[in-house]
Length: 601
Image (spheres, rainbow, N blue to C red):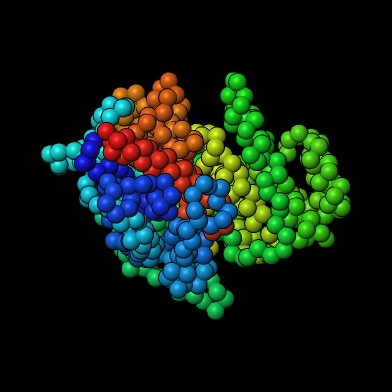
């Protein structure tokens, strides 16, 4: 290797790849001898068809109507002293500080893309002089090479591969091949001239075939649905007017389709909380912290999420809720906090008979008690005779959610949110725990801004949006798609268009990313849920015998070390920051040693 510059290839130049590069810049002065003048240096190749910084999802070229789902003050790409990492802290501005925005604003995604581009440019400028970066606007399609030697990264449309001493896969969110149900629906749509849009990133979907006034079945009530709602209403010329009472009225352009939306829960994600924290915070983690995670990881037979992990999570969230209730709203309790805390700590599970009796005695109003099962299934047992009758009921549900989420009297909800963040930071260490938790977390903690739900209500009142209910199922027969739900038994809605308003769920076998599929086919390990298995210490890709690959790393949602998918909030420990730092340090140490051996030879 004498005379050859070491090479690091990062596949994916979005926020995760940019975050990794920031950690390389921060750690290189300490760890990488090749970064000084006259030394071998280092070539970093960023491979992504989209611009560095924002990547595909956060690129600046997307409709300005689409917002971020976090307040500007809650978005940072920079570490602070709360991050448990070996590398140095390199502080920088949050989105709202950089853009000089009100911290409570939900910025549009174009603005976030600009922030990410600036972070990338600042990071490149901060690299030592011997480290140079080149962006390749292509897709990486294959990685080859022996475990003990240089890798080759093949790019779409390029005749020669990039040489790489190390490869990091920071692939971000991926597309998935259609599952059996989607293949059947797509085939039926082709055969009968229908419109079928499978799970996708809404900003990338072609919505042009959803015609004005036409009924459209929409399955999915999360954030992908909110984007769809915006693009098919305001995006087609509709507008909102605010009345004297503050209520929104939607003025249609006449170009909108009529949306009929349902899902498993049948309700939208909970609104973002619209007030600030005051007073004492719950001391978290309390019942689910590093010690409990260590014990779970040490179990010889492994662990089951529902049996072994969820009771600890439920108890942690309950503790956060009741700590806040007793501290901020003591008039709604009937027991001294020390007495409640002592007994709550004794009982093994939050849903035990003893705990339920304790809560009933200490918290007189059932509305002040935390019921996670009821939160997860808000329409369980709810039945209506017709879809028309159901509309008022669901509007009332959304209105109550907005009221509660914007009233400090409901501040135990914010404590539970803090508990969810704490829990997520611990769960990252457990690897792949299945999809249920991620959906539950997003439903409670990562819902839309309040203004979006107010718009949803206005669209419902205007007849542009109709609710279908919980347990939504879709069938195809007689030349149409047909939707039913458990909420309105015996009724159905027909349409010639169906939109699956949810993100793709790729696995290593079903992803459309050929690089990842080939890695799996060649022996990379996957979890039962189909995520790429990595070493939790530094992100090295594991083979099926559990041995880490010395030259291949992976970070992000396609791995079992994935985080919540949201940007890191300042001063919250940032598991993604910790992972990025560990990977950057491992990569720099490997490349340093490689360079030293080559120089000695």
